[in-house]
Length: 489
Image (cartoon, rainbow, N blue to C red; front, side, top):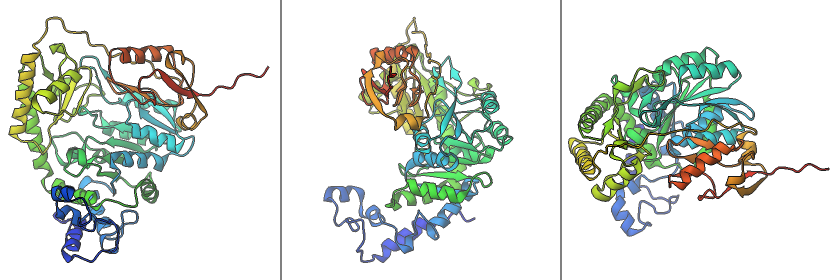
């Protein structure tokens, strides 16, 4: 296929150049009706292609024209049989994957460190999650992926599962042996769904880990906007034919998608596909080279450590995307949160994330020698401010056991609830989410039985000021639980 073509973007440009008289939404009508300051900042070119579903521009909900052509080109570029554009982000694509294969009561095998969109879809579907604990790195205080061995155990216990979901690569760029996991799951004739939010570049470079489509996965939700150059909120859902009905996928993604689809976002997917298909290897090469330079320089700074291929070799650490530059700061006697705030306040520098022991910086095709040099200068200055300490705080990342699931997440989420003091909630069934950081794994999900160890772990985090997210009461004084009926005597 000719990947220099951009069917949708070209059609949008032609439409704007024709300058038709518009009596349809959006009401700003090429920017004339919008705020003057906003129009001046955004520019008339962008506003001229901020359009709505009309015949010449096709319809994302039932594509038969230029959007269909663009999606076919994307499928070819990603090695998929079908590609669906998402203007609801990768969250919308992930929810589509799960809702396409799960019905009420169905089991789905998922890692415990799933994105919240996975749990949202499980609630909507009425599915029953079977959790696998990710491999924990005791040296870095982060989680890697799930292992083939843990997937095998889950399948042996739950051969009736409707799907297995894998995160690949992880946020920190670590990959399991995805092809081996796919082959194992397929031996049960069960589809594999991949959260590939942080892996758009890997399909376009032989120097990066294997992509979901290359590994033979059935579906993969891939964030083009995170690392591939498209605009925020634009992603793709890639699919292999065979185990999943593509017509059902189209129906589900349409149900989850606004009818006022953004043509600016769609055009950015069309053009980013062109850039990746034509220049992807060079783009990846540039990012890898800059990241490796940064990694070597960071490891030469006293008190900092940036892991590389030396951590590979385990089941959960099969491969690495080096463009994820994770910097371990514990030996400076500060937390990752401290480092993030210091870099922001003193160098106007924003990192991707921070946790108790690390900060994560993404090196992408948008970086240059200059941006990497600025990062290194800022890190060196931070080390001058926080020199390496003699006694390093012991790394402690202890997670309570996965609680008993007493109700499906849907039953709990929509059940009759009451609010009780959190410290007195042991033995009750929670009806909301509680996540703690590090490492971002959910400690309690709707339908799980609260244990005293859960309460102690969460209270310890709150008392030292670490982030706890999810519940309606952000102070975690109270928690929403399922109402219990008293026995009638």
